[in-house]
Length: 177
Ligand SMILES: Cc1cc2nc3c(=O)[nH]c(=O)nc-3n(C[C@H](O)[C@H](O)[C@H](O)COP(=O)(O)O)c2cc1C
Image (cartoon, rainbow, N blue to C red):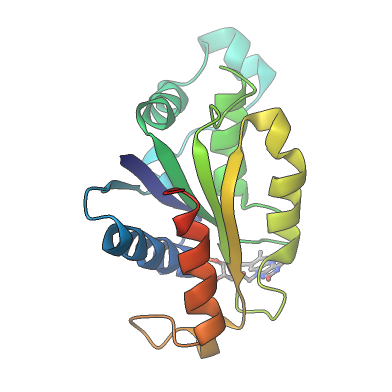
């Protein structure tokens, strides 16, 4: 199984990237045959989507490349940073461009939906909006978990709280069921 994994954050010290890395290690521990490809969304930075840009120049090549990467994967693990209750603008721009190829951006691939946040609500808003809109965008959710209070949850290398460790394990197991 080929798994595409990334954080929907453009921050060089992204806690969501740390969480995605942790989740991928747990998935490989459960099934060593799993291959993980990590993507950095900074490699897909494009001009802000506008219909005028699309009409003038077509769909940006980087959006086509990212969409093809999702298509090549058997499953996805994505951790969403929450900015003001929504996904980050950096991710939304890639998403908007890709949605012009096909609204089913996630292409019905089995999907682990994660979030990491310094706050106690554990990215509840961004998880909720992704889950609510999942059917429209082909997000085939097999597991979901939010890690909150990040500075207490992560010791620099790994998750430390039993509830978080169990929550991530249960979420990634959804890809193996
Ligand atoms: C502009 C901005 C808005 C934010 N809004 C929220 C928010 O609504 N909820 C939340 O839990 N954290 C919020 N945060 C804190 C982020 O969750 C925190 O910066 C986190 O590290 C982002 O994830 P990342 O490290 O993977 O980029 C916000 C941070 C920024 C910079």
